[in-house]
Image (cartoon, rainbow over all chains, first blue to last red; front, side, top):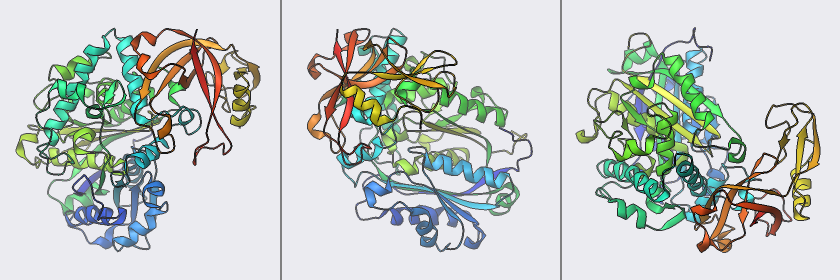
Length: 404
Length: 135
């Protein structure tokens, strides 16, 4: 990416609804709640916001709305500003964040609000599963009835055969992703499973209901209602309004076609490229990263991501999680918020929710304190849309570029 | 759109013919159809009939199906590497309870199966899916 002349950009305030089931709140109610919290904690006049970007995946199917962005801007008193909906499946709001970042960095805007929202739990499992399937290939994958758990179930089989790990052994190692992430989510008041499943055993994961063999219910993230939002600004503006601006050091994004064209999805090339782009822009390597929120839509997905992002060698991610290397205090802390599996996955909101979690970590404000990664200075997000079709990565820091 | 529409591809598959697009530049075959060669990106392609055979690379058993397909579950979905090179997603013609990791590497033949259309599926008349049978 040509990035030499880009301006520094930083995050001011952040907002996040309680993830879970919200039948009483519309998409717009959820968006408004997160957006106003982000604006309030930015200490800016609302009129300073020049544009609104919203990540929103399947409002057409869950809530009967596609043209969400202008209503969203109007909802928070910003009718008149350019308002853009960004659709990138589960990575929608990460892509929205990156577009807003690039426009501020390029000097087009100074202050932008980025949000994301989805309402999948209230839609019910059948509608939710159909809605999510729209982010795979609608012709050549959907015709066979392939679902998202099915896509990652097939990835787990490929992983088992490729690295010669017997499937039963791999399933036990995968279970540790669920145990870890549910363990953190049980402590996180914003999480869908707050206060639940904090003490899972391997056997609990293996014996829960089969969704797509070999993935059980506890290998999967849930359907979730929720929203998240952040305010982004040119760095000097951010420094005037908040005590601890969190700087964007690097971003990456990549794309891919159907899984049948990608073939070996245990090494997703879209993710390898996106991470390379983000690390190059930031001038950093995976060893520099203290805390990560990555796309654990399924247990095997966290393992594949932890390798493709460069934290572990290919084929070693399953052992790494089973050995505790991805816990808080391990080699690299992965998903201390509880991740998608424990915190929940309101698709369009997930990318900004990950950014919210990293911002809290880098400000040393993570609550409760057991979830705080000690002395975290550099954090990274990873969001996957579809079956590796869209990947977006964001690297954040407590210091400006070149000062870290 | 390339030389082979999704409709023409599935109409042929329903008759048991697997069509692909052979690249005039690199000689490799693209399937399912797309606008350029999936291997080298060239756009000079010709329709060819592929061999109806391949090897299972991975599989899953879908227990929770999307809305519209609930009556079909449980069913076995797999990816097959065809003998001409491209990978395909399709259904495997076995009982779900017979599916195990031993399927990986097994040879299959490839035909087409017609299933009921679904509200959002692009072909409003029928939904054809590659059907793999253990050889």
